[in-house]
Image (tube, rainbow, N blue to C red; front, side, top):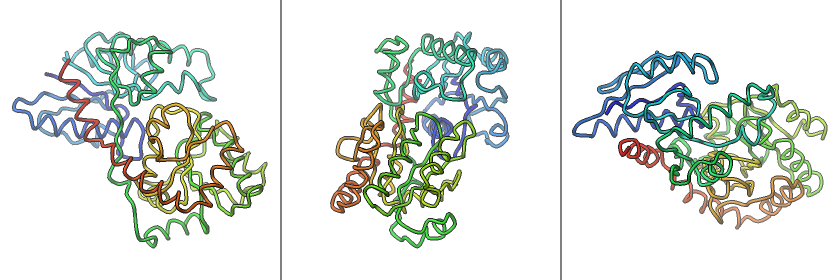
Length: 374
């Protein structure tokens, strides 16, 4: 077979679709090399990833340079794909040329833009393009990979995808997320960001569905109503489209208690997970939600929303769940776990076991077998 993979979102850093694509490609190449008659794998890149990727036997890379939601994606990328006459393509994201007619599998991570278009997708033609592309992509696909049952159910309910067309394959968690026994290892990172006491941690992007203003309000209640002396650390690149995150901190007078380290590198992220007293994930919607599992793997108790895929992924009894719309409840749950050390120990033990159930090797192997079966 001649198998293509859309690598226009490709990254070895952090999590998300870029990491998903990177992990699948590396495992696909390994699995393919073990076959008696290996397939030909064609990888489609944008720069700079095209320049950086080194070809190996039975693998060829092609430069596309077509951004998502662009005319280049719909016409230039389409022309390149058609020229290759591929037997199967894996699109790790729903953005693909709507007129591509050869067999393909598409991964749908979530329907966030359907439910929470946010401050970036305000123009009607942006929303129209999104709806056309995702509906066309799912309709014409041979199979759809959903990263959770929650995403599968959303596809069935919101886009009328036939249930039998969707296969659920969970994401993995990389080995770099690991428990560090020696706290001296991350002392330098804590000092760098001015973290001088026990803290709650949030990691990820700043989007409206991430519910950060409500987390900040809940944190204010934790400190002022429940007298719990903690700091809140919120990583991620500040987003000009969501000024309410920092505005809420100023409004509540929490400037000295909330720390914004910015976009930290992967090593520091692991250090922060390990150093945190608790990890808090107040998201209103997730297709999968890797951060809670990353925190669990680093031996940190998790408090998380009781909505969308989050309880499914975290698993019953492995985290403390709360209503993400209820600031009082979030604050109360933080207070309770702060005061209950035996609960903390239990969550650490159960969380680490749960996180070990998710591997990129399993995810890639099942995805590869699906591609070859069609």
